[in-house]
Amino acid sequence: MGRRQGGASRSMLRWILIQVALQAVRQPSALRDFYLKLKRRKGHKIAIVAAARRLLTIIWAMLTKNTEYRYLREDLRRRKMRHMHKNALPYVVNSDLPQKIASAVKEEVVLVPTPCSVA
Image (cartoon, rainbow, N blue to C red; front, side, top):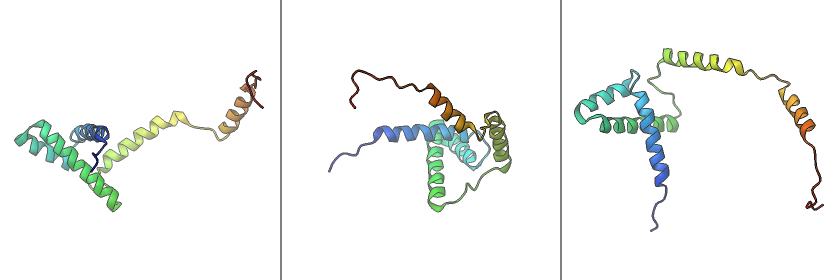
């Protein structure tokens, strides 16, 4: 049997999950309650890894069952969507922008024959 590869990708996924869990436990939720309860008994490091594992289990269940997050706070979602919309407003794209880009590229492109080119 050959050895299994992919340790770097597993450690990267672990790091990402821990970072997401650190942010998730800052918001009032069932995951935060789970984390705080475990933190009192086992300490921060073990509790945050357990919260990350629980978060991964939730994500997996959502993807396999094609469901939405059951603990979604509607007020938080609305606030985030409003913030994203406000930040996106300065970046309005005109419908004629592709033609402007294409004409600018045609004007700037000048073909210069090189002595090494083979026809």
